[in-house]
Each structure stands twice: as structure tokens, then as C-alpha cells.
Figure 1: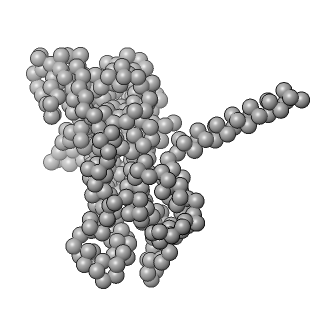
Figure 2: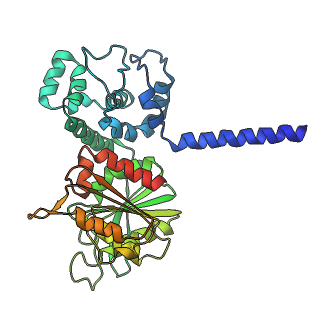
Figure 3: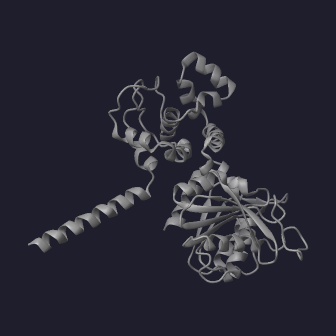
Length: 364
């Protein structure tokens, strides 16, 4: 009888721990933002457990709230005095309301002058109108809030500048974010640098990844080996060095996200890497390589349908589809609408879907 009770108790404990683990794996913000029914006036007691959960999460919920500003899914207005007229509020509106409530940021001051003038006439509803008028307005406000967050975060949340040697005698500098045991290397495109990944790096850190955004040789302080003829020769060595740096500092898995030129370097690195060094490879409209059939690990190819190259407007899709066809399994191809190239997709209306595809692939 006693043994039976102990067994049942142990099973119950295991179930509870499993449930807790699942809940922890999903951010508090994702769990509660769309479920809030009432945001009380400042100083009044709360009657909403979802509002309380977000308030209790504090600063840890801020990146998720900023990321949700572009979420246009309908959600009823949870404020005590709802928006006027037939104004349609969304999850993105809620994210702004909660940021305003939880932090010292004032989004009204981030609005363009016409909307600040409108604010003097209709109050906070000018902010609601700004979010509804154009989808680009949400992205503009989101960019300003990411910059605010970057400036206002604690020193412990800021990236750490690190450097490590490359196989050909070069030296690579990178920004290191987070402390998770799943590593992600971010390899920028030709027009970008390591700082260009800041928004995506913070989202990945929120999902408990440790992120290393590199500057390729010839960018910032990074440099190639003494035998390097052209500034970008041997760029795959920079990716390999980043992968091995993460391995040496204790991560259990390493994935690489490469965009455009950085995607080509990442693809070449997967060929040169030992089997198992690079677990997953995400290529954003990568520069084609000679032998895609030799790439290792799980692979996700992503590009825009109407992405063109050069002044002659040569479509990238046929050549990259051929790269996908020649690459070994396991692999997946995602084609997004639009014409934005590689990292530029993040600045379009398809940026949120791109980030979701990346997170899904990294977490499967």
C-alpha cells in the first residue's frame, strides 16, 4: 500500500515537473499577452492574472513585447476606457500598452510630428491610429524601441566583444549574446556587419540560445591570415572558428545562420567542418557554392520569390533552387513572397514569418 502511494506520488511529481518545463520553454510574454482582458488604471488593483504575470516578468518580457509590435492579429482593447469609435486593436497594440506600463519608455515621443500634434487633440488614441494607419508604422516604432532597449538595458545584457584565431592565421571578432547551451553563429551579408544581427540575436537569446555574431575578415577589427590575397578569401574559416569557439566554451549544439555572402561562407564551412560540428544550417539567399552536395547537417534554405541580382535583374530563385536540389537530406526550402534579399527581409512585412521559420527550424 505504501509503495503504491509512493509510486503515484513520484508519477505526479514527474508530471508536474514536465508541465513546468514546457511552460518555462515558452516565454511568459507569448503565454499571456494575447490573453489579457483588463489593464487597470495606474495605482488601481489588478483583476487579471495574465496582466499580473507579465508585470511580474518585468524586464525579461521586454524583448518579446517589442517583437510583438508587428503582430496584427485582432485582440479586444483591454484598457479601462477602450479606443474610440470603431478603432480595431491588435496584439501589437497590447504590446505597446504593456511596454508603456512596465518601463520608462514613452512611445508618444517616438511618433512622427503629425501624430504628436494629433496626440494633443485626441490623446493616447493618436498612438492607436499610428499603429493602424500603415504596417510600416509598426516596424518604424519597433526599430526605435529596439534602439531604446539596446541603450537602456543593463550592462550584463549587452553583448560581450570576443575574438578568436582562425585556421589560416587570421583573427575574428564577434559579439557574444546570452548563456544558453545551444549555440547559433550569425554570419552577415556583404553590406552588413556583426551589429546588424542585434534584433535577431536578442530574440534568439530570449529562446535560450547563446549567439555569436561575427564580423567577417575585412570588417571591423577582423582580419584574414597573412596569405590572404583578397579581403574575403577564406571567409569560411571565420565561420569555422566561430563554431569551434562556441564548442570550446561549452555549448552542446551549434547552428549557423548565414545571409547572402555570409550564407555562402557558412555553406563552405559546413563542407570543411567535421561531421557533427555544425548541427543545423540556415541559408538566407546564400551565395551559391560549387559543391552543395557535400554540405553536412540539417539545412534550411530561405529566399524571396522575386529576389533579383545585379543591375540586369537576374532572378536568384532558379540557381538557389538548384543548390537546394543538389544538397543532401535532411533539408527544407521556404520561399517567401516579395523581392527583399537575405537580411533585408527582416525589415519587410515578411520579417516576422522569417523569424518564426528560423525559430521553428532551430527548435524542432
